Length: 632
Image (cartoon, rainbow, N blue to C red; front, side, top):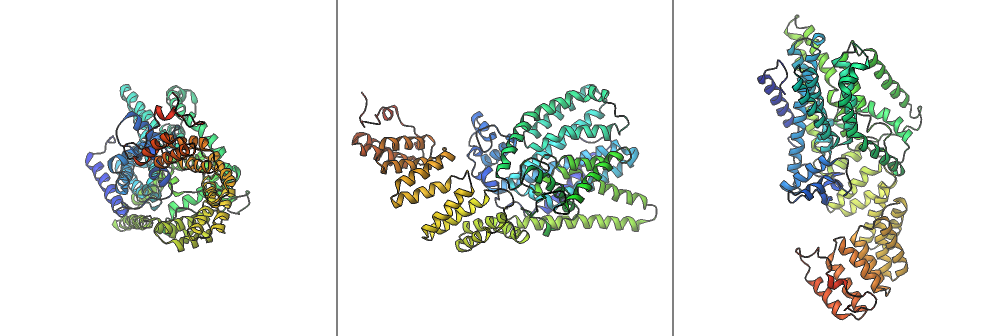
């Protein structure tokens, strides 16, 4: 993929420089702990625990968190391969993330260089194209905002989709500039293949056909003709394939978004208005990336109208002005116009009406890939303009560029330090967003995990009064953990009240019902216990422990046959086999079926890693649940 006219030596120098600077900036990131969505998607996700390379194992790994088809099979499969290689050792996950990041930077350098060469009649010589590509790529690769994608392990999704995305565009450019038909076909095929991989990694890739069309119009055609006939003839098959790859996923994603708004503290219209300010804020972070402005969860006030807060209208006007500039200057400044449009359209998936959380820094990873190209063009243009004056101006600009690289590198290194542990991450976040509920809640849980129970419980109580930033049901978890604190400390009445609040706030939160059922069972109120555990099972019937609790309550209520049914359900779900066998044995004892009881008591005692998943035998199934006797 070496660009035309660029020697392998220069290419190697560029790659080496990018690698060394990036490695220096990320040298303290390889042992950073797990954070946020890492737990649901990796640590607590049994599907990614790939032990053997089998079709079943790979399919299971690619299915994501649930067994249903996922939007991101390639990303989950990459986590499974990490697990297969070295379990949950964070070092391996970070190495892969960093490696993908560097490969993406190499591809980006190639893409920018080839694009500038394509426009060299406007932008100058090959050396200038090389300088623009190198400066823009390094500024992007070591920018502190990328830490939230590279060091935050689960956001490999953002890194991986960007790699396939920009690779697809490189192949498209090569196809359009190749003279031989067989090469064009080959590059088009690789373009579609890369696009498919991007779509199978994350939904951001849905905008790839739009990026390719804009690239064709603005950079390849250079807006010489807006006639659609030749464009349809050449590009319709490619665009049709790319659109077909994304349309099924896109439809499902929109449906999922409608469901998501049920638990969001904002409407689709409020989100759309707020995102205008968020995108402007993203641009400000890219231009002024001091660590004090970077954090995991930002405190972004919702826009409830065009005039509230007052920054909403200026943000909308600024985005509109950017679009008008691109339209009016696409012929005069094609590369600048394309880079601005690339930034805006690739925020369209996560930055418009889809019911996601409001703001995350990792969402900039793909959209910001060309953000620094106009900056690099200005720098190189300044150098070229003042070259004849002497070395002093050139040297000053060189020092300024080096200063930017060093400042970015230090910022990235410092931000990686914040990501080292959960406590360091959330303590920093609480300091930067003191009015948000979720950072303080997360800090409290992190403290309790490390044994700081009193400090954690205190932080939980403080977080209740703070503002929820993303989901209505997040405070349900806070009430739940407050209940856990009270229960451990022996304050059972207060614990029950907090569990009840958790259940009321979190409409689909089953755990509080289970724990309230256990408390009612121990107090002897079996009817209330049965009602509560049934509510938990109504919310989620796939938890083996819920069925075991229900079986125990039914057994105490004198319903051994029904208790046995629930215990068998727990067995089928593969959880707590020893407890399930014990309950089944007790249910047979209650019916005076002593032979059957002894059989299951023997199974309970003999439970081992080799037979924990054992299903009841045919002999077991032949036991009559009502009479307690074996059938002939």
